[in-house]
Image (cartoon, rainbow, N blue to C red; front, side, top):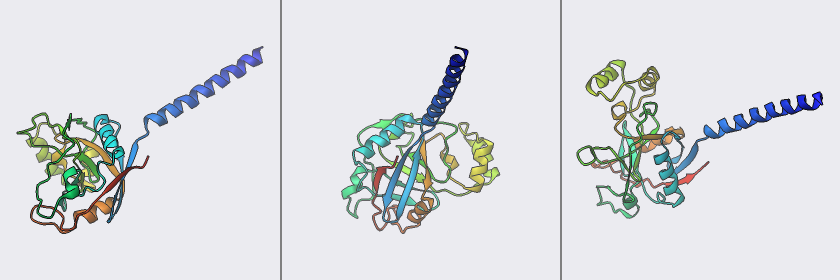
Length: 225
């Protein structure tokens, strides 16, 4: 009887350990999406900390919303932007891209999610029209940016009460770079985990004076995991 009780207790402990391990793995699982272009593929991890943006992005991808759209605004050393549904059939004469699914997403600012090199964030209308800084329902950009000095970061903190960089953020911004002046103004909801070199290739493509690439860089976005 004592032997049975001993094995039952051991079994219970092992079961609870395995269950908690599986639970923790499930909580740390991120959705991965793949952006396919003629320049190569970009793999992106979507953050669980921004569920509204994550779920909306997954929904649109499931509906093939992005397939055939292109990166319509490209600024080397800054970012590449896409996600406008009207870009699918846009002729070369089109220079303004303000399309969307017809809705916005509430901002999900998070002090731990910032505009480092390779971050993906939601585009939006300016503060004068959008004081709550709600995100476009579909348009997004991938950060390229540049490295900043600690003095430049200090100046940003002094001029913007919303910005306060952690030591880790400073380390990344001074080494890898990004666009720190956009922090807490645009929602960051993921990051590139493979293909940052493809982002650089797209960013360096030739553009017109409106920042539209001369050659349309179309995309297909799939759910990878």
